[in-house]
Amino acid sequence: MANLLEVRDLSKRFTSPGGPFKKARSMHAVNGVSFDLPKGRVIGVVGESGCGKSTLARLILRLIEPSGGAVLFEGEDLLAKPPAQMRALRADMQMVFQDPYSAIDPRYTVARAVIEPFEVQGRKPEASVDEEVATLLEMVGLNPGLASSFPHQISGGQKQRVGIARALALRPSLLVLDEPTASLDVSVQAQIIGLLETLRDELGLTYLFISHDLSLVKYFCDEILVMYLGRVVEALPDTDAPARHPYTKTLMDSTFEPDPKKRRLIAPLEGEVPSPFDLPPGCAFAERCPHATDICRTDTPALAANGGHAVACHHPI
Amino acid sequence: MLQVRDLGVAFGPIQPLSGVSFSIERGETLGIVGESGSGKSLTAMSVMGLLPLQGGRITDGSIAFDGMELTTLPENAYRKLRGGRIGLITQNPMTSLDPLKKIGIQVDAVAILHLNMTAKQARSRTVEILGTLRIPEPALICDRYPHQMSGGMKQRIVIAMALAADPDVLIADEPTTALDVTVQAQIIRLLDDLVKERDLALVLITHDMSVVAQTCDKVVVMYAGRAIEHGPVEAIFDAPQHPYTQALIGCIPRGLDGDTKLEGIPGTVPTVQNYPDGCPFHPRCTRAQDICSTTDPAFVVHEQSAAACHFAGAA
Image 1 (cartoon, rainbow over the protein chains, first blue to last red):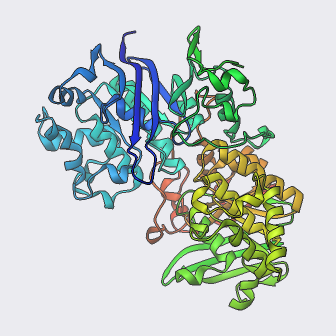
Image 2 (cartoon, rainbow over the protein chains, first blue to last red):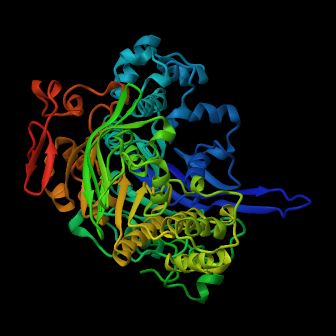
Image 3 (cartoon, rainbow over the protein chains, first blue to last red):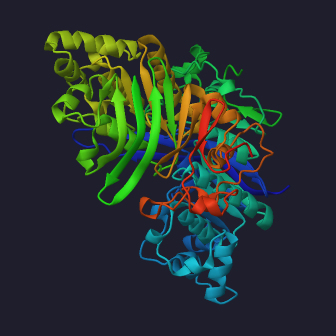
């Protein structure tokens, strides 16, 4: 299967300038991330807040400029493209955002919001605007009668459907889904996930799915990248693969099962994700890791593959 | 310890809550679960006697705490209970703490107010409680400000404040929703230990069925301002009787048996102005008949649990 997207050693460093009363600080929001996304696959990126998963999504679409690395979309290096070409390419790669409330202009009607991508690209839909709006709304399971509604008149789940319709307007091949259900109720989350599955099958879409919810990622995705403080610490080739990185193990153990008969005494990991500013050398997880030894505090482990299952750990489980 | 019977709440002409009943004993954890707008938090506010602050009032039913009727309790007596024998943990620890005061002073105040302790006694009690909550270096933490602490640590401080007056009942309103999963596991474990060690009655309000499955003894499922099913946690998960409970359990993604496709529940939770007549769930229910849109279903008892549905039973 051809790779739709190849990400090579992608990095983003944010720096805050120093001043008379504060030191200059820098953080590696995304640090040396590489992966391949074959056509038609769904890769999930999972991690806790601050691990760089949303930054990664934005870097791939070049919504923010990377500090280093490469993003190849259908073999073309996106980072070498001048802005006009980049904009044209984005028609083929779209994003669905976490918060449908802020992703849609409150003064736009649903129809205008859904058709806006055509305006941005200076294109006209093949059918008439009204027909195109109706097609797109039906595609995401909305009544075309909603076309003249404003965002405040529709529910959160409907708004997220509008967000998806907008992303689909230009018939992209890649959708980057940044926590598309995090602000929705579970019953609506399940609707949206069901819709995304149907769309993938019908339109042959490829997804990069960003989420903090491991059970959702396990349900929805083919492969899983686990991020911790800007790095991919483990790449699970399938959703049943056992965790080899202690952090992935912790994440799996912290995820509750919805079954009272499967109660287990979780031994929660102590501590929390440390500040990403000015990280000490070595493995970022060493401070919280029960298996950490001296080498973990001096050498950063590389992501080493072992038959498709890559893990960045000196002492994998 | 705490018994709520047929509770109804109104804000002016709007009735966002009606017919909510549950009871809880010491050493028990009761889960109140539902989607947003189902009335979970309103139930907590009613028990805490905080409705008048928001312009609401209790119109029906009773709330009995240790033999005391709370719905008719005068405000000055309520003040002694609130934060004293009944503790509250809110969703967002950032809003429960005063950003301008040191942690220690905020926790001390509870024991000074409710247990008539001196400042010195209160401080040693604070340090002790922070220690039992596994907060490292509790004596030093007392001199910190909230902004110097992480989200999980702040939530522990809020729990410490709730514990400082030695409560009998603890109401935790979405205590882990704002936290990361690894921190959520820590806090849930901590609450679980507290129930056992201190013989507390814990009312855990959450939207997360997985949290309920892992921690609660009993469950109340709420929908559109009503309790629609209640029972022991095993019964609710093994043999849910109400179609909403069944659908809600079906909405949880399970990584391991990924063959069953998530369908979701069609439609959305009605807003309080649009509560339907009859059973509040009937517009979204696959089993709805004519009677569902006209007549309020009564609770049908099935073994240890009960569901408010005309067609209660396993699907």
